[in-house]
Length: 287
Image 1 (cartoon, rainbow, N blue to C red):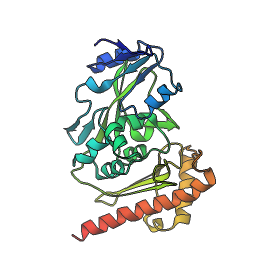
Image 2: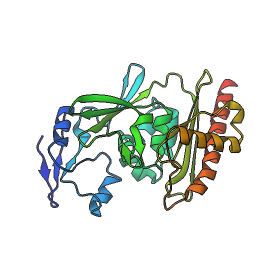
Image 3: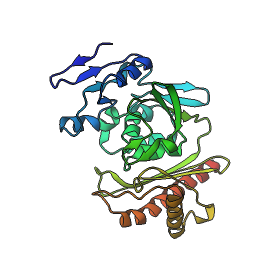
């Protein structure tokens, strides 16, 4: 592996093993791992981020592949939205989210699941889906590989559990041998804007519910709502407030929507996701 130089005098490293990747992370003061690059490269061009080393992981073994393993499906760090859309072994919820990702074919082909996770934009679709499906993040660092549940991976807006000398090298998804009924709701101001609220609901065969709110909060928020309240937005709003307080999460606010508006929209998104999941489960049971 030989670091290269381009006209802006930024070194580019192409590690071929995880060990080489970890070594690269310790070589420069301001290193950046670039997967799809749809978010980081525009920032570099505008001078908002000034790295001295770009690390390209596409030569890592299986970087762009989906690998079936015991009870799990492993995603490499270069797996794109298009890849999971086309592969029927991926969870239906994630395929659904990927199909509706803001930005169209260009982003679906170039953007990566790992890149979206590491960017940790509160308004991004994919963190909500990863938490809802019970994904496990595989992180490489000087001490080796460690695993972190997606629920704990996102810690604050644009912040994850990744240390400066660590990189996300894979994502493990539960096996889809039994596919829970899912519902997903995304509320946006316009077709091309970031969401202002997202909600993902999964109902397993045994009735167990996985419910996650995103975009309206600073990091994906796991909720517990009794079945009798599924269609009551006022009670859902109260449950969201309770979860925010208990899990020390905050409401998210940006140029698209303020906190009071997001509070109203969040309960609607959760209610719609629950309704969609329940409908899919009923339709499947009737077949």
